[in-house]
Image (cartoon, rainbow, N blue to C red; front, side, top):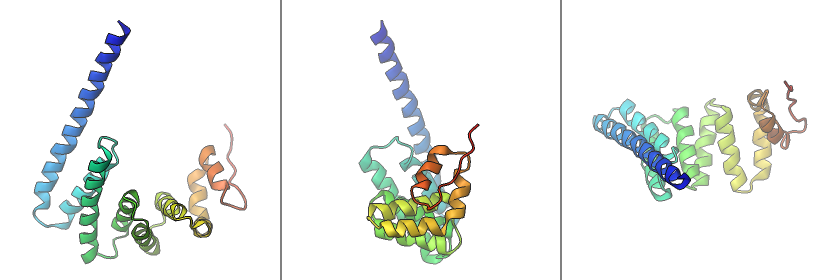
Length: 177
């Protein structure tokens, strides 16, 4: 009786995942059609959709890598004509990091930072790239340079504050409630 219930649950989960994937596919088809116009906004919408799909957990590793590679191509084409778009540079950097192109990812993320996009997530992605390359000194320097942004992010978040505290001379304090 219990195993029948579990089998039924597995089928329900598989059906739900299939429905979510079908929805992604339908949206992707619609966005691809719109992107044929060659206009920037539909192209970027498609790239963002591909990002979301690649990060959804629905795809196997090879399909996820192919989807990311397509997003990278769209982002790079956009940056060829709009090199100052820091949001796209950050998104490109994140995708490049996910496919293991760390040097290219670092360059894209540093370009976004240089243009003023100093978000906690961008700083975190850049720190992760540098850490993967074993550039520990650069990770420390990055965190020190953006300490205020990172401290504001961890307010009230004990696990994040503890992790950040490993890199800072004065660890952030967290109020206990």
